[in-house]
Structures are given as structure tokens and as C-alpha cells.
Image (cartoon, rainbow, N blue to C red; front, side):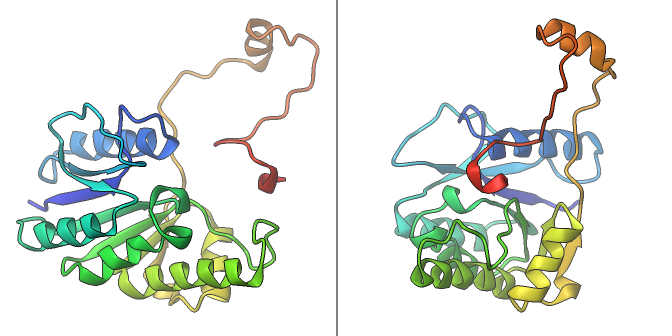
Length: 211
């Protein structure tokens, strides 16, 4: 059976990507079609976490040498496939460019899941240099990954139209949700003390660049 390693932040680290990855592997492992999932945990700023046994290696996000070391260990292992859960802030370097060090050295097939795709006119870029550094990382991910998954058609279009990433490399897998029972909005509003109010919501974390 296929043996997959997931490169990601991971619980108990308080991080949306960590929770997402936990949900992904829990559901993939429940299919019983692959070997039990393994995690390569990404640690922030030299932090350490009390991980479970599924975390078999760790990367110090700010230490580029650990990207080399872990890539070597994966290359020498019996893993068949590597999945990278990508968010720019997870990886060290300029716009997380230490990830490219890892991907270039990796000899195993890799699929990168991109949680954020920025259009060229995004206001998050503070200078032409910042934009160029970002573009270098995105195009590098496209170059060194065997495939890329995104969660929306718009994200796929951004990658294809602005970063010279081959459309054949890109797959759209919509963001899933846990199977929870439906609750009528009136009951949810009552529980939150918002009776009679119009409530707008969005999935994910809130920030200025999300409009």
C-alpha cells in the first residue's frame, strides 16, 4: 500500500493548517487503502511540541539546514509520496523560500496543497521586491512539485494565468467540512444572542486582505 508523508504544522500546535491536516489524515486513514499516515511536523521559531507517534520527523522552520536533513531522510525512507501543506507563513526565509530548498532536494514525488494564492494586484505586496520574492516561491513550487492542489477554481486560474504553472499539474479539491448536523440559523442566532440580526460569515481566518 502507498505510504504518504505529510509536511505540515500539526496538533497540538494552534494553527489552522495543523487542524486541517489532522482532519485530512484522519479521514484518509479511515479509508484503509494506504499505510497509516506519517507527519513531518513544522515547528515555529525553535518551538517544540508534544506530538503523537504519527509525527516521525520535524523541521525547524527558521533553520534551513533542517530542510536539507529531512529531505535526505525522506529520500532514504520507504515513503512513496510526500504531501506539503503550504501556507507562506509556515516556512522560513523570504516568503517561505526555505521550502524550495526542501522540494529541490526531494527525490520522492510530491504534491503541494496551496492554502493561499495571491493575485498579482494583491495589496499585501509592500514593494516590487516583495512581489518578486513571492513570485519566485510560487513558481518554484510549480517547478519542483509533481502536482499542486488548490481549493477553488479561482485559485487554479491565478496559478495558471500569472505564475506559468502548467494546468495539467493543478487539481481542484474543495475544502471539506466535518460531518456535523444542520442547525437552523434561528437557533444558532439565539445561542449567540443575535436574534433578529443579519449575520455575515466567512470560512477560515479573518484579515484585511480578505476584503
